[in-house]
Length: 227
Image 1 (cartoon, rainbow, N blue to C red):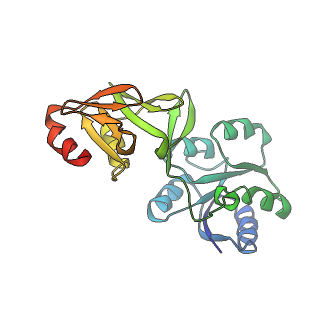
Image 2: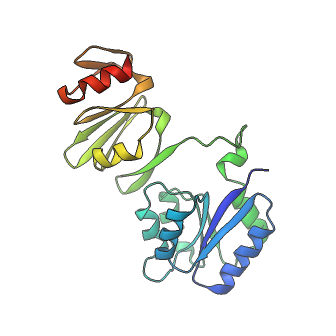
């Protein structure tokens, strides 16, 4: 059975204990840690590969909603809160579910059964993706849908076949996140998906009716990678 690693971020000991008990009763969940605030949770995420966070809203130092906004590529998140008025904000940030305290076990099971891989024909496969802020929302972008990315000063424009996303991000930082064989920096202002390249010359690349320039300093590496 596939296991999903979980992190509880909760400053109320009793609430954390209830969640811990529920997780231990659920065969496909595995508890990796309990953090009393978002600062410790950030450190835990750097050390552990976490699939799911149970997140309280009212945390010391940094509130749960603000913590979600700090995460570049968040795992699935289930908010646990005694306050229903924050539900809309949670769903705008694409949390998986919003549980009101006190949490009943049946409601807990309904939430965790929404885990994407639980509903996939092959639960071992999770499509790689990143989240980007677009108009005050975090938007999920699947890496296999990206055609190319263009730098626009302090912003980048991510183009897929169906739409484009403009987000405040550094192309250099994104290049580090995309450091694999799927993507290729071809110009100081462009990264392309190698499998979306339809044609190329020594100076240009054609992708989906768009012509992407190849920078002089990148030419040798690009032609070698595409040939």
